[in-house]
Image 1: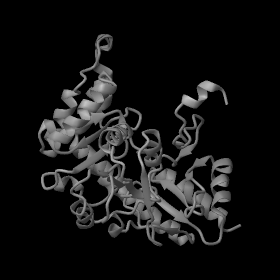
Image 2: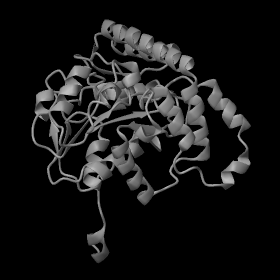
Image 3: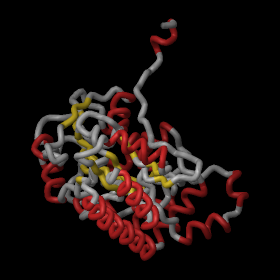
Image 4: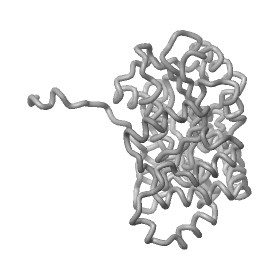
Length: 352
């Protein structure tokens, strides 16, 4: 090791899903298979490129207002960032500064460990049970903060709002973050609890239900004090985080509620149909309430199946090979045609 390497911060990075550019059926990164609201394309077509010579509004005021109006909260309760990853990272940096460990599930979004290690935050993982469900009682103990996705990833399992509230209520002296990237495909949001609990932050994204993964928009909703702390950290880190285009497109995406709700219904209907079809082929699927399905098959090695899907059918799904989930794949819910292609290949594969 060279002398200067002793002072380099080394972390094990998050490994994102593959982003192939050749023609494939891409069901590996939970993107929405449908385009964003028509107004998004229209605003891109009509935007004056001359705007791009100027810095964007550091407050992203138009987008903040659109979100505040949509969720019926004040603008002081909304924080926006470059995807929910940016928002969550800023939350780790801002709120998890205790010497006590932050708690999150052992099977969950793998970026949590990366941020904890990057920012030198102690953490402990609470094991999900044998059915991959979060055990709420594991969070009823001393800690430096709590974060969990609902629905969880990569399982897709939804924790009922009453159980979410129990976790918050048992942890009034620390910040509790509920990561709701997939909530639009599931049940009630913890946003209902914002006014009741001043230690709660709810984080959501435009990447899933709003079909804008490529635009990178995420947001947090909380009380004005916690949002102010987030903005103080953001402006100390990078004032101009969101582009002019992202702000304008985000506003248009929020406006079209009917398109948003129709898209969600299509994905949920396809998800439920695909779960039944996978069950017919002998797969065991968790009862996902996200825009993906977490599945295993008792008769086949899942890694070999994943490789066959990728190499023979050019169908990309997500495989980790991690402890406890080494025999599971995660399948993003695509269009009906994409899911038909997946199921057609798997039907042939399971009949060999």
